[in-house]
Length: 381
Image (cartoon, rainbow, N blue to C red; front, side):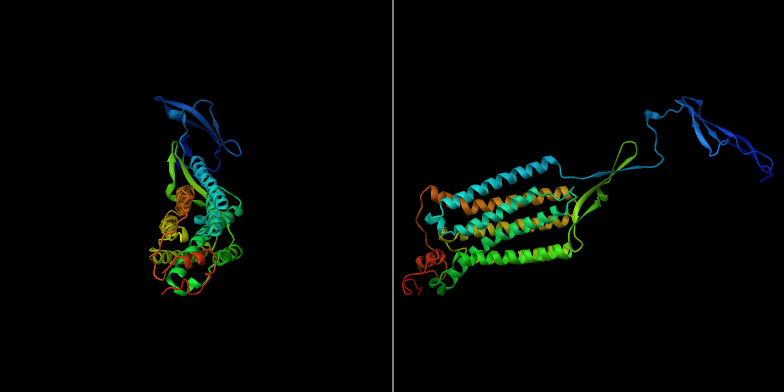
C-alpha cells in the first residue's frame, strides 16, 4: 500500500509511512444544476465528525429521505362510537329487563302469569341482566386482569342462568306430558331452581379451576396482516392488548361442550313438547322458539369467534350483537304473551294434544304446586 497512489473523494491519495492521513474533506452536492458545498468532514479532529453548512442542504418537498423504513406502533382499540352504541342498546335492554321484572312481581298472582312459574321467570331475567352487563366489559386496551375475569364470569353465568331457566321449564313440561304417572305428583319451583343451581355450580366449578390453574394475563399481539405504510416511508404496525390464558382454550372447550350438550338436550325437549298447546300453563312453544334462537346464535357466535380470533374490534361487535339480539328475543318471546293476556284479562286455559294428557286439571296442579284432591279424578286412561 505504501507504493499505491489513487484518486479519491478528497483528491489524490497516497500511502506512505511519513504521510499525514488527517485531512478536511469537502462534501458537495448538485442542487439546481450546480455543485453546492454542504459540509466538511473533519478528519483532523478526534473523533472525526461532519461539519454541516447551515441552510446549504435542500431536499425535495422539504422532506429528508430515510435510509430505512421507520416503524410506528399503533394500538387498536374498540372505536368509541361502536362501544357507546352497543352499551346504549344493552342499557335499553337492561331497562326492559327491570320493567319485565316489575311486571312479573306485580302480576305474580294473575292466573296466566302464575301458571307460567313467575319465580323461574325472575331467575331468567337475572340471567338476561348479566348477559347485557357483559357488553359493557371490553377486554381490549386494559391492563387489569380482573376485567378479563369479570367478562368471562358475567357471560358464562348469564348464559347458564338464562338457558337453565328455559331448560328447567321445558323439562317440567316434558315430564308431565310424557309420563302419565306424573299427573299425580307435584313438580315444584324449588326442583326447577335446583336444576338451575346444578348447572350454575358445574359452570362455576370450571371457572374457579380455570382461574386457579391458568389465570388470565394481559398480552400484546401484533397484527401482522394489518401492517400498512403512510407517507415519508413510515410503516405502521398495529397491535392490540388482549386477555390471555395459557390453557384457556381447553377450559373454553369444556364450557362449550357443557353448554352445547344442554342446548342440544333442551332443543330435543322443546321438540318433544311442541304439540302442547296450553299456552298459559307451560310456555312450551315460546320456550322452544327461544331455545332454537339460542342454538342458532350460539353456533354463529362460536364459529365467528374462532374465525375472527385476531380481529378484536370486529369480534366485539359481532359477539355483542349476537348477545343482545338473543337476550332481547328471549325476553320478548317469553313475556309478550303474558303482557297481552294481562292487558286483555285473559283467564282461560286451552287444551293439550300432547300424549298422556287426558285432562288439563292434573297438569295445572302439578305446575301450580298443588296436588290433586283425588287420585282417581285426573288419572289418565
